Image (tube, rainbow, N blue to C red; front, side):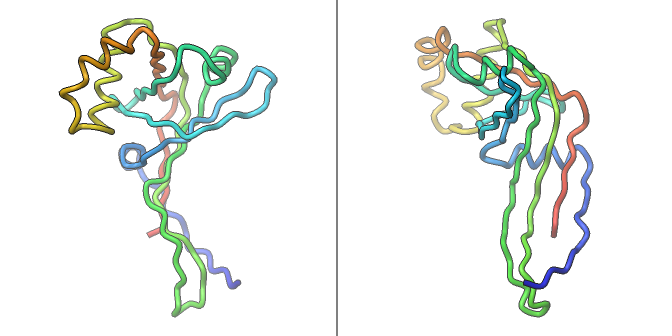
Length: 160
């Protein structure tokens, strides 16, 4: 396989945030209490330039990891297009990707939990918002909301 390296294009933080907004899942990487890595794709929603949310059960490995070390890494791909460039006889991949580092914390405030759930539902199931209030009434007590605040600007890259 012939490799021809074409420079990746670094993008500004706003562009990187758009990658996170468009990605169906964001991989959140954290550290287990034994020091080993733990990463998984989650449905995240962004509130503003620094704040992301996800939801989970009230206990489990994610929460154990975050209690041990709240520093997380986020990574997302919003475009992935493998290509064979016939004219160059070259295999490549076009992509849009972003990474960020943040600190995670459990949300205790009920109004913020509801706001985060509303943002999540509006992002992933906007046509079903008429059922939102009933779902929150049934599940708020058994749902954990995790807030991630970015601690450094996100970085994005793309290849055309």
